[in-house]
Image (cartoon, rainbow, N blue to C red; front, side, top):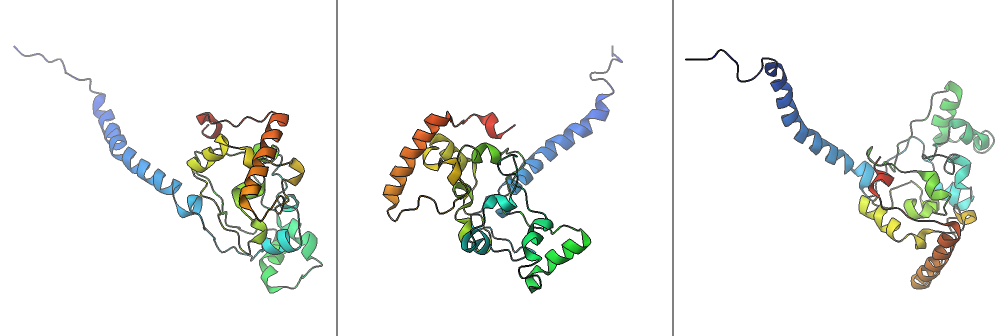
Length: 225
């Protein structure tokens, strides 16, 4: 005697292709995600793209001594450090070197209103959350993450920006904490003897952390939200 009752409901015939697509697609998605997360544009030390305008931080932040916040206006207030609009460049260059050949993209942008398409150098994966203001307002200098930007003719990635690199700092933040008024002073507290510098920076950082009530979090949700 046979039964006409089906072992599986008929609607499963429509679901199985989707299950198969997921089974085959998940590994591909994982490989692509890992590849993009580890691409030179996000993690490689020395990544140094050619920008549409040869802007020299060595000249502006170094020789002239411009404060980082003149161009990166949101660094103390927002998660992202703003890329300056053309109007900020033209504040100076309407009178300083207005006919320089290298400034042609800036002049064209000023005339047309089209933005200059700068290439991002320090670009974390999308699954990582980083807040500039949370670090800057606690005394973490630009130098800690970006290196001596005031010596760079063309900006490059000075640190790995990897998870282990971030955790190393969060587990031992004291050497990276400085007085807030020295946050954008890229030449601050330099010494010829690195051992003396490290000892002084650690003692000062520990005191500032106590005074400001700073506690570095290593909880996963701090960076992965």
